[in-house]
Length: 347
Image 1 (tube, rainbow, N blue to C red):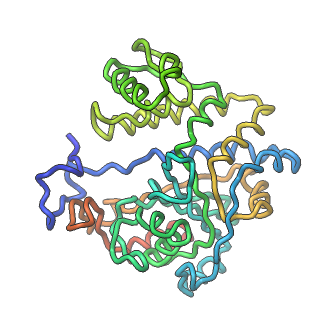
Image 2 (cartoon, rainbow, N blue to C red):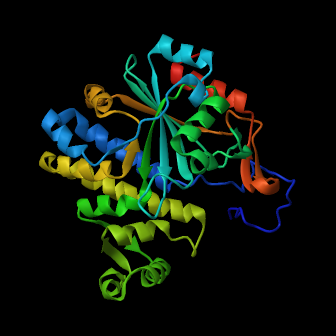
């Protein structure tokens, strides 16, 4: 059984080996939201006209940031890597802000999206949210806290300074609005167990108005058709079992959703992307995004890594550490070298 991070048996100064059977699962809800949004764009962007683009991207929130090297903590050698290879790095943040805002809250996921046009590749580097790193002005903390402390600019700076990266832009996806996207494809079908039904109904009973409860409550077990609100509740419940089971439910929901997207007629793409864009905030201008359309439409290959990974960061330690709580500790310099090797094809 997986060790819960809140287990009282942990001592403040002890760690649990990453290679043991008691492993910490990366929360995937918002991270999967990021990847699904990218998948939708991969399917759609190669088929749109400028007029359709303007309609679809109208709900997108664009926020300019100070992109200077000093503001974002970019070292000169990191700038050289980007200039020599032509690779563009963009930070992807997944948040779960219940007020539909992406301005505050911790980032449930942090992903470095690398666009390599020369080799026709898109690369994703996932940084585990509980990585223990220095955050400018806040000492050592979990990396997920950077977004809460200073929004996207501080989160980008934290990535650049700790992993020696050149990241100048970001996209934030808010998982809290995912129900709208599920409703836009007509909901999903999934198998509900008795325990899951009870847990879902507990949440629905406590969160829905009296008038809405009857239509939202799950009436029976087995394969059920879920609307957006029900599907998000299903993906989030965790009281009955482990984080692994919760992750499996989230993967099911997002897998069913992507299946629906891929089966949709092209005429429905604009409305779908418009809904997805309402979940996003970015520092990229609309002209810059439009410039990526031909590349994304060419169906580049997708590669992914996760940091830390016990296969490569052999010094990884994990567990409760002082006031920081449950964290991953590892050599950030070595991790940065692996990330750059992956992104820039360095040997």
